[in-house]
Length: 379
Length: 258
Image (cartoon, rainbow over all chains, first blue to last red; front, side, top):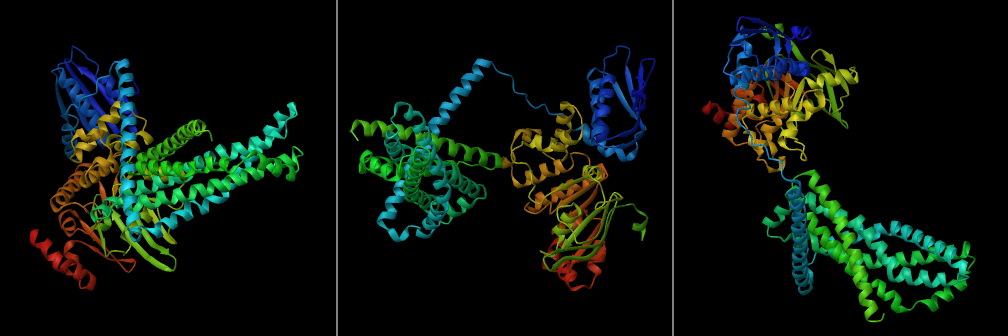
C-alpha cells in the first residue's frame, strides 16, 4: 500500500475512511490511478462514512475527476455517505460535470446461443445472396431499358463518355493483357511438350494450344483480368461518386445515373473485351509457337500448318462469342456494387472487393454453362 | 498590457508559408495566452486555415519559428512532438471522424493509442466525453455516416477533447450549423473551456461566436496579423477591411441580436 500513499493516502478514523488525494490526477497518470481507486473501493463493513480530501490534487482533469466520481458512486451504492473536502474552486465545474456522466445505463447485448448465431449467419448470407441477385436483375432491366432508348435515339447516347472508357478499359489495357496471355501461352506449350513428349506426341501440343486458347483460356484470362482491372475501377468510381452525393445531384437534375454513368461504361466494356480477348488469344498462340520452336524444336512452318488443321473458324467463334456476355456481366456487377457503397471508406473497399469476387465467379460459372451449351449443340 | 503577464502557450514568429511564388503567410507573428479563447478571423483565402495547419504541422513553412508549450516544434525530436501532440486537440472543419469506426471507438482512439488504461475506464471516459459535448450515450454505436452535421461536430469535439488537452484548435466549429445549433455549440465550447481550463484557438467566420465567446480576436490580412484585441478594439479600428467586416450589414444584424 506504500506506493498508493503517493496518490491516495488512506486512514481509518473510527468508522470514517479518510482519503487524501495527492499530486497530478490526469490522463497520463490514469494507468496508475485506476488500480488505487479499485483498491479503495473494496467493501469494508466498518466504514460508515468516507471523506475525500482534494486540496492537494494538482492538476485535475476529466480522467481524475471521473475516477473520484467512480469511487464516490461505489460507496454511495453501499449507503455510505461521501464528502468531498477542500475542493479547489477551479475543479468544481469539472466535478459537477462528471457527476452527470455515465448515469444512463446503455443496454448491453446479451450473448446468444452459438447454434442460433451460426443459423443467423447462414440465414443472413442467404438473404444477402438473394438480394444481390435481385439487384443484378434489376440493373439488367434498367440497363436494357436505357439501352433500348439509346438504340431508338442514338443522339442521346453519351458517345464521348463511351470513347473515354474504351480508351481506359481497352486501349490502356492492351499491354498488360498481351503480356499475361503471352506468358500463359508459353506455359501451356512448355507443359504440353514436356508431358506429351513421353508418348512421342509432341505435335499434338499444337492442337491442344490452338483449341484451348481459342475456345477457353484466351477469353477466360482476359475476362478475369478485366474484372480485376476495370470492374474494380468502375465500382470504386461509382462508389465514390455515391459517397460524395454526385449521383444524387445527377438524379435531382433529372438525369438517370444508369443512362449517364453506367450505360456508356458497360458498352465500352462490351466493345473492348472481345477485342482484348482476340488480341490476347493471338498473343497466347504466339507465345505457344515460340516455346514450341525454341523448347520443343517444332518449326514455325510446321506449327502453323498443324494449327490450320487443328482449328477452324468455329473454334474461334465459340471463344469470342462468350466475350461480350462476360463483359456485360462484369459491367453489371461493377455497377450494382458501386451503387451499393455507403458513407464509409470501409464500405467502398468491401464493395470493390465483392465486385471483383462476384464477377470472376460469374465469369467462370457462365463459362461452364457455355461449355455445356456448345457441347450439346455439337460445336 | 495585462496580457503580457500571462503565460504564452503558443507563439509564432516571423512565419512564412508560400505556395509556389505566392506568400500566403508573410512574416506573421502571433501569441496565444493560457486560458483564453482566441478568435481568428480573415477573408476567405486569407490563410486562416493555412496558419492553423502550419502550427499543427500539416503544412511546411519556409521561415519562422513556432513554439507550443515552450517547445520549438522544428527542433523537437519525435518523442517531444508526440508529447506536444498529446497536449493539443484539433477539431477539423468536416469533423474528420474515422468512417470505419463507431462514435465510441472514434472518441476512444487517442486514449487507446496513447494511454495504457483499462477497457472499462476507456468506455466510461468516452461516454462521459460524449455526454459533456451534449450527446446521448445512445449514439455511441453509430457510425459517422449515420450522424447529422451537428452531431459529427460534437463527436469530433469529443474526440479532440479525449486526452484532456490544454490547447484546442477549432477550424470553423460553427460552420454548417443552423444559428440555434451554432449558438449552442458556442455555449458548449465556452462551458468546456471554463470547466477544463482550455486554451482555445478558433478559426471562425461567425460574428456571433466572436461576440459570444472570444476573449480576444486576431485578424489576418495580407499574410500578417494586422490587429489583435477585444471586440471593442475591432469596432474602433479604421482599417477598411475591419470596418466592412465588423460594421457591415451582416455584422450589424449580429450586433442587433446580441
